[in-house]
Length: 68
Image (cartoon, helix red, strand yellow):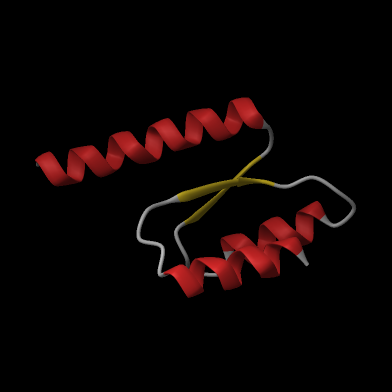
C-alpha cells in the first residue's frame, strides 16, 4: 500500500529528481519490487545508511551529467 502511494505521489508531482525510499514491514520485498519496476526515478534502500550512500551517489552522478 505504501509503495503504491509513493508511486502515485511521484506521478502526481511529476518528480524529476531521484527519490530514495526505505521501506520496512511485512511486505517489504513486494513493495521494493513495485518501486523498482515502476520506471520512475525511485531508488530503494535497506536502511538509513544505505539510503544516504545512494542519494550521494545519485546527486554526484547527476552533477557529472550536467557538468560534462
